[in-house]
Amino acid sequence: MISLTNISNIYFIGIGGIGMSALARYFNSQGKKVSGYDKTPSPLTNQLKLEGINITFDDSIETLDKDADLVVYTPAIPANHLQFNWYKNKNYQLHKRSVVLGAITQNKFTIAVAGSHGKTTVSSMIAHILNEAGGCTAFLGGIASNFGSNYIHTSDKYVVVEADEYDRSFMTLEPNIAVITAIDSDHLEIYGSLKNIENEFIAFTNKIVKGGTLFLNEKYLHIKNRLTNNFALKSYGYKTSNNAVLKEFKVENNEFHFSVAVEKENIENIKAKFGGVHNLENATVAIAVCKELGIADEKIKKALYTFKGIKRRFDIQLTNDDYVYIDDYAHHPEEIKALLNSIKVLYPTKNIVAIFQPHLFSRTQDLCADFAEQLSKADEVLLLPIYPARELPIEGVTSTIILNKVNAKRKRIVEKQDLLAVVKNLPKDSVVLTIGAGDIDRFVEPIKEILANE
Image (cartoon, rainbow, N blue to C red; front, side, top):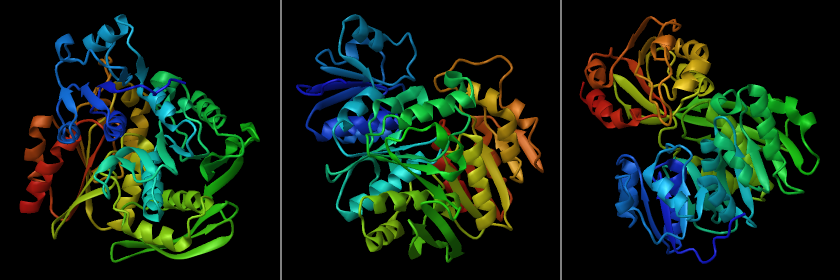
């Protein structure tokens, strides 16, 4: 593990990424000199600059920090990145984001939330409850609405981290408590198969400190016989045999009212304002983790009621007589399934319009049929071109391969420059959804303005 002692200047390559920016905020809060590069300006880089962090958008030797003691990079950067290769050739201390996060959390009581999806919401819920109950430090994979940030530091007693399986990042962590929310087919360009993904999650559980605890979603208990006995295994979900059980729920006045049993102890009359039925399951494990830490029921209930959610996770932007507009980061079929199932429960009579931007050519190719199956739950599907992120195009892989398999009343490909004109003509009494992990979020404010004035 790397040492962070005697580090004063840190340079981030890809500082605008959600995980990178949380680390940048951490070092900035420690009084270090923080600077970095990103490809394009964004609301997040704008905020970092307001916090005193110098950011360049020019990949050149002239704009980097030659006094950097530590250079942190994201694996999403291209191999020919000028700044990265300059630092590498000059033998600077150069590390991936995950390695630095592992070093920060070493010898701290760490709660690590892993999973193909759901990890941002669960880690944010846990962090919010702990913060309300006395404080914590948290490195989140989304902007928590209660804090307007992906980094929280109100106490050093607990550290909450989102444990990312991409590029095996979570293997640098040694948590006292771990959560696995889901193990599904994703990042197949790295792992090759679902079996290999399962194997990596199992390897992650071997990083749990001896005597620690793993909370495992009931859907994945088939792996339990392959786990070590170094930690306590606890399950959560709907089954009454689980250590943490979501017992019942109802919706009243746009609030969830539900109850949970943790180790057979009932916690009744829990209220929450977050969106999405799937978040009840997320709340169940967040409650169980906090109970494990000795947080009192009333403090947990009070905190959950004030939890405002995460930006771009079932993020309700607008509700008026004509439209409900929700923005969501969902970029995997299982996430889209959870989103659309929740919409159908909460708005059973409304027309559903899904505007989806596929993320990555490889993911689109691997999961094309699954994307189409879930999107078919909408009445109208508008597909934007694929957002490439870190990838080069794959011949024959475009949004059309999803569209051809979608079974919806209305469906079409929409170019980015035409999207707002299409939105202006959407039928009233609709739930409008923007879905995806690319740059579709840049349309949120313009779409919100259009639907507010239609």
